[in-house]
Image (cartoon, rainbow over the protein chains, first blue to last red):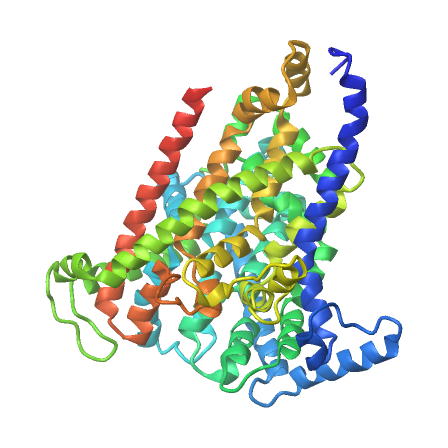
Length: 315
Length: 290
């Protein structure tokens, strides 16, 4: 861009302003829905329905007492027992995430580093499993779980993950393939078995990758709507996502202020983890692409450097 | 590669959980589903073999065609819009501006918001009497439509809402843009290429794999849209936002036609495969054009 045209120096001064204006506008538009939800959850019903931003900013005590009242009304509502639903969701999600992390890591290491027959076929099946639409699976799975006596329990929501999860296995597989094989070869010369290589050499190096699959699976399970809708029958066993829908659609009108307060509560755990593990989240989305063998074969070394820059930029 | 000493059976233990999982939760259900699609199974009655009648019935099922059309329209509008928007956002966010990082967080945050909660927010925003959007319309001196209860507007509302969660594609594009070699861009600008032509002729070809990846992910997502329309419009008004996955759900768990729902599931798989093929061909053509 070095002064090819006489106007380019003026252009260079204008562009940051244009970018700044666009960025501010984009930030505003994307934040607005969340901000609006938060504002409504702090308002009284009449204020929420009147046009304009009716928030007594000059009287913070009034806002706090109204917010307290709204959130307490949601949490003590008898028709939807939100504390119980939170407990249910935490049970289901922690069991599901633990299962996924444990078995996907072991399976992925097996696929990446242990000499197995039909390894390519197993990998292909894993990719196909990722692509099968859930609506195709949910009908026969429901009948299968009904035959197993699992309907009416939490089992359909977390038990399958104890056998591995296609997406997590694939991500961990790509990660293990990207580790230098020399480390494990050296450990083997020292007399380590495959299992000790896995637990002593590979696992300590894969903490970031494990964090990625744990986080992605956590958000997936916390936010999932269709599987709980299909497999859960009893209202006392609902997850929060399902409970929120029920809270909105039950007979009698739920005021918008309370609905927004309930929405804030539902997304609070994921948003908190998102803020705490920002870096992991943003790297996770690009990890898939960066770790792909295609990228590595075309330019050795490029994948690792770009991974580093992506991580730095995201922080 | 590890130890040829340990026996094959011992080595297979590594992948044993996943092989059992694949068999139990994928292979068996898929086989069951294929069988059900050839029967008139309901939730209670034992299945009776009826051959390809379910597949033949699809041709006469007007609701089925309606859902295919709705999903196709949604995909045809929402995917290109999301592709353009996310590419533009990524280009904007890749500039070294002080605001780029905080704005990236705001763009990515909606992707971790549960769809049910997002639906509640947008129900409130699209509310025709007290919603934020129509309030802005009124402030500008216009009258906003009844978003979720008017034919056409309901679909637009769902598409607008879907654009709110483009964060994932943005991050993928952003990573791809960082991989574009700087010397390539500099030499292009030395040859006198302007910003726009530099983007089309130098940047786009380099990030082509990311474009294909995002397009395929979005095609898969579009064919499985369920929660937002189910919660916000219930498929209405007049079935104008009745999506494919919603129909499968209704056939299976509301009307309890398990056999027919299984058929719908297989056809969905087929349609998705066709769409991914079409996306791939479009992507190839785009490569030829430059």
